[in-house]
Structure formats: structure tokens, C-alpha cells
Image (cartoon, rainbow, N blue to C red):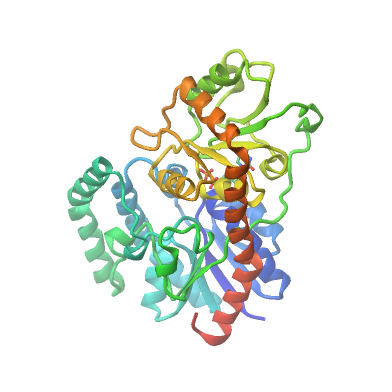
Length: 405
Ligand code: UDP
């Protein structure tokens, strides 16, 4: 039995694909210790892994709640600063636990720096598309210019922190442009090579394992018996960038008189009472059992979070993607490229669509539904065939045994 020390990130979207991998490693007899905030203790312990709590990361939690949105450069600098603060804690923990394998999320720069400081090798878990020169991902030009400007403005602040890291801990800081993508000797990527932009250009130490899903406890009070009409459409903006009342109202205006039925998940931070009158053909909840719902629906109107997108394809559901931020716009363009859905409002300011645009997009998708469904299924197959959490566990165990990818 080996020991794995896993430095997580306090964000549900990062934990959802990682938890089934952790559970599988524990099931195979490995000892896994996960480091996170107290909010995730229960989910971690439910896998059979041990929990350790980060010291004060009160600035990390709000950053994770908006990661990817807003100011990418600011988030990168803040992550390096948090990294500087966490190096002593991370070093102590690694030296005390003496793990056979250090594992970290690609945002956990403190783990990446500490493993270099201690001359160890590590496994990184990547829950987004991999962004490196190989992926040739480009941002829309105005956003690219703004981001470069912000990187230039914040460079002195980054440089001060990088110099302190070098002076205090004798290790080179993660680069400013790498802070949101801290890679390792082996990288488990939760998408398929096919769906990853330029997937075939990545070297073998990138293991594209597809969707890592296991059955989740669901809220049983969802009224499945009321789902009687077709088409059945599911609408969700995910769990983070979802406070978009204007969008929810546009959906009511677009589809309130539609013969189909609509399930809408609005997230825990928006009050149902604030949405105004809800049409009879809508079921609105703050949170729904998404996996069970996707197995029944004809169309998924989504923000294009990578988990939601994968889950839709896993069940062969075509998408209308309405990105709320830049990372999701990249997902949207891949969905369109493969003909598995339609994208709307995919440029800054993100998330703005009219009722008319929504109506037209749904009509377009339904008029050619078999073709979109076929493409969604092809991507779903690529995600399934990539092996999921079991393949991720195979790769991690092989890495522990051989010391290389
Ligand atoms: N989710 C869910 N019920 C909901 C809304 C979301 O179970 O009502 C789950 C969904 O299945 C997915 C995750 O929350 O696994 C959202 O992750 P994603 O990467 O799609 O978006 P994020 O919330 O990170 O923006």
C-alpha cells in the first residue's frame, strides 16, 4: 500500500472529477490524504481518504468562487502570493507524511513549488482544458489585449513575490503565465484527447482520462413524475457564475409559451422569489440532481463548464452553450467545432442573450436534432472510452511504481 498526499482546491468543479479517483485509489488499498478547506471535509472522508485542513486560506476561497472569470492576471498573482504563504505548511506536511506520491490540482502552485524544492516528482490533476503553447488556445482579441495589459501592470507585484520565494525558500517561483496551469511530471486531464483543443499535440505524460463520474447522492425531492412533455430542456449556469437573473427571465420570456417542458437550476445564491412569475411549463430549483436529469432530456442549455458539458455528452445530449466567462467560451467553440451544439453570447461581455436569440437557437437545434445528437454521442463515447476515474487510478499507481509517466 502506498501513500498519496493530494493538495486540492476548495471548488466543487475541481473536486467533482477528483473525488471518484480518490475513492478508487482508496478502494485499491492506497492511503490517500487530501488537503482542503473544512467545507470539503465530509466529501473527502466519504471516499475513505483522510482530511487535512489548509491554514488560513480565506483569500483562496473567494478567488475560487470566481476563478476563470474576471481578471485572469490578478487571479494568477494572488495564487502565487497564496503559494508563497503555503510553502512552509506544504513542506512540513510532505516531510511529516513522507508520501510515495505528491498529487496536486493545476491551480495549487504551492505544491508544485514545494515538490521542486524537495526534489520530488508529482502528478497534477487538470479539470479544465490544458492551456500550453501546444493547445494553441487563443482568446478573443480585445480580451487578449486587456489580459496582456493586466499581466504587464501586475508584473512588478508578481516579481516581488517571486524574489521573496527564491530568497526565503531557495526555489524558483511558478511563472506568472503558469500560475493557473501548474503542470507536473504526469498530468491527468479530465477530458478526451479528441475534445481537448489540439489534443494530439500533447506528449504521453498527459493522460486524457475523459469524464470522471460516479453516482452521486441526489436530492430525492425532485418531481420526476411531473416530467410529461416533450421536448424536455434542462437549463443551468453551473455552481459559480450563476447569479444571472436577467438570463433566467429571458428564458421565461423565450419559452413560457413553448409546448415543451423546462427544468431550470438557478444555483444556491439566487432566490427563486426574485425571478418574478414562473411560467407553468418550468420547474425551477436552486439545485437539481443533474446526472439523473440529463439522462431524460432532449437539450441542455448550459454555461459550458467542462463538467456539465462532459455530462451532457456522456448522455448524448446536444447543447446550447451560453458562456459566462472566457474558459467556457473556449469550451463553447469546441462544442460548435464538433457540431454537438450551438453557442450564444460567446464574447465579452459574456452571458448576455435575448429571448429572441434563445428561441431561435432552440428551434435550430430541434429542427436538426438527430445530427446534433449523433455528434454529442461521438464526443460522449470519446469521454467514456478514455477510461475515467479507473484509468486515472491505473496511471497514478503506475507512476508510483515506475516513478515516471
Ligand atoms: N450540478 C448539479 N446540480 C445543479 C447544478 C450543477 O449537480 O443543479 C453539478 C454538475 O453536475 C457539475 C457541477 O455541478 O458536475 C458544475 O460543474 P461545471 O464544471 O459544469 O461548472 P461550474 O459550477 O464549475 O461553473
